[in-house]
Amino acid sequence: MSCLAEWQSAVAAAIDSEAATCPCPDRAVEVPGPSIEQGFAVYRNSSRGARARALEDAYPVCRRLLGGACFGALAARFIGECASRGSDLNRFGEGFSVSLGATVEHQPAFDRYPWLGDLVRLEWLCHSIYYRDDDAPFDLGLLERADPGALVVWPTHRVAWMHSRWPVHEIWAAHLGGQEPPAMRVEPGDWFLVVEREAFRARVSAVDAALWQMLRACQIRPSIADLANRPTLDLGRLGELVQRRWVGVSAQADHAV
Image (spheres, rainbow, N blue to C red):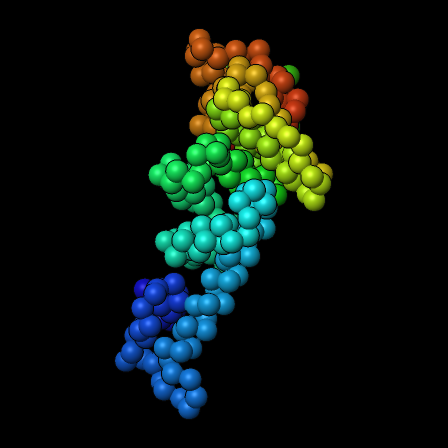
């Protein structure tokens, strides 16, 4: 590691640390004005404030349900536990659902919201899918020209998916925006959800188990022949995934792309 990279890493760690200590003291230079420790405190407060606002942007429904004070306390705990090493705050907060899920599980105050952890997972998918890269164009003519069994399929960047015992997609839709949410009776069940980026926004669909399982199976970039050898999958649903542009297709030679 270069001296500059070592210094930058130490500064980032000091900003995230609760300890008011100076990294690499042998390289620090005292100047008139605030001390080094005071300077780090300023950067620390600014950094944590920016990350708190990033979480509010990523999880607006969760914040609305819990209230600003409760959400702020949970966000502060997460920020204190999970340092940010990325430069793009739009991509900060993926682990918040895990942190919140643990809190919900162990705090009786959240017994009214057993579905909250899943709701936060859905909110992250809806937020993060907006910032994913676009997919390269793929040639659908391959389905006619090539040996179908040798073709490789994979989920496109414009989709994500999750499974939940709760209708969190309905809760999310009802509380999104400024409208007054309707009274809802939330009952456990079995929901297979797909989040799709469409026209610069996230759209959530509840699909049947067979379609969802086929989409999930494509995650490891199998060949169509591999999928056909799995009797638990309905291979006939693959065409629907291609038509919806939820999966892409390439020749076997492009498998590693």
